[in-house]
Figure (cartoon, helix red, strand yellow):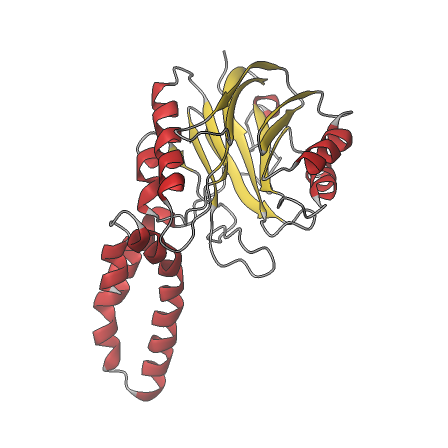
Length: 297
């Protein structure tokens, strides 16, 4: 337990592995506590220290609370101006799976105002475009990422984030009562012993938002990093990590039996009303669903 807690502060492979395993250590501690209650209650004293260490380590990734009076994503808090909120949904649709159209349709049916899709191939991008064209007239795509919006897109640019190809974008959406800079990224994959490109992109997105002069910013996408991964430290220092408000840890992958959260949402200058996940299409990722409130211009 102590090794894992220390590990999440170590950049590189050690930190990545430790971050992925950390949430599950809580279950191991719980199982040991149950056994101790049944067989040897004195062992509970031995578990106090590792339990405290685990709680301190997991705290930055713990669930949050929905805004008062908010029953579900897409609903404004009691007393809040409903026209000042909007919902953004992001999902990795898994390239070459043929499920992008289904994902797009199901996400649109959920009431999303802004839809971000990652890991798009040429065919899946075309399918998503056809599905969303009527209700989301404002769109921008580059490489394997794309965004659709019910609101006008005022600016759009591709981002390389330190790599030789573009797997991220930035648009400015004219959301209710505020212009919101929306970043969408698909971080490079992590393979045993190879994660330099992912770390480069995560540093790059942190640098990009640090230089952004916008008052309202939201960053969504597939970061290929668990919630406590030290590689997320740079962007956590610039923006607020959006905590799930549904009482869970917001695991997004794999969709059949979610084991970790590698799809994230970060914000600045926006109030988080609700944050959860949803199944959409046939992707191996759950989608992140976030309801945000803007401030009056």
